Image (cartoon, rainbow over all chains, first blue to last red; front, side, top):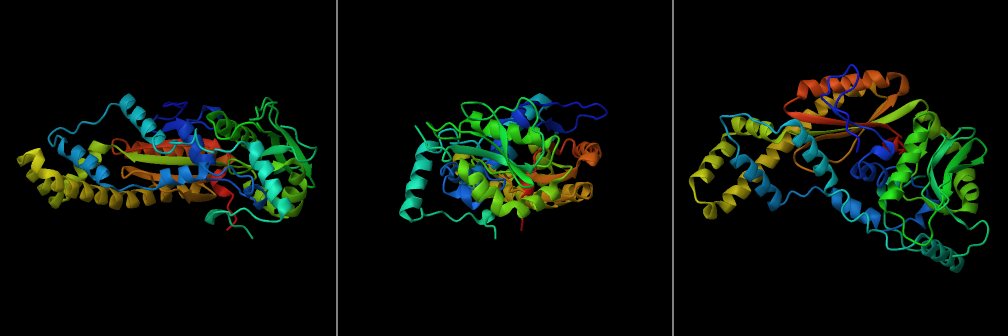
Length: 142
Length: 249
């Protein structure tokens, strides 16, 4: 990940990240896995698996664990001293926080090799039956 | 694996207008590493070969997809495909480009000279918890109660306090996010909001920005960041390809 905290003319209050190969994996995953155009022609060869995992990871979990985490943070707050994390620590925790959850499971996702999926799609089309496709609400066009 | 001509699996990164020159040195995710275009009429697909002996989805595949698109987007209008997009070579013209040419052209016209930024913001935890404690007597009272009791006896009180804190965070972040997007929205052609992942997340929004207003937009983000310093930490990703702006609805 490329972090530039300083920019010519800028004060460096905003953490910057460039696109392309210098993005963190979390950025890449967030940008390309559930964004972008999906055309029907792709559906039959889409590698099912990645999608499920990312959707699961995006669900906001307001669980007891979350509540206890915030209770703990609230409890240990020193009311008389308004101290924060120093900058490097904070940048790191933000970066790690962003990476956690979003990337879980992506690497081992998609059990099917591309060749197998294509071959199966072809065979199914020749047999004239359709593989069940899960609803993909954002991707309905026409 | 051997495949007949025309059924060769082909990876599609995105779409450009016919005649768009690809940047030098693009690295595809296939074994050849090459990236090229397949043109039909006024549109073209950015394509490469695909590794067929393994599933797609390793880090290198994801990074290659984004890197190719961002590199193209740095100089030309591009419609990104959602990862992963694989078709047989024959289908690119027959099923992808030919039947959708007008629709793709319309999308590309709308993206001409525009790039995307994604802005995320996260509360500085201690600062915002201070604000919440000062403004919410119920939470402050629970905190005092919890601190006066042995930890074993406070489990349900702690869950309750945490729940109230999370609710308070969510209440204030909606207002905060709206304020941020309202400030930056006028500098963008379009905005799109993404779901937030954690209670301390404040904003996650994409902005489609004219290339010629890019610097102006970045400066505005910086000045919002300066105003929020100490409470909210902003992070700006981009310019990247317009991943969030290809929905046609």
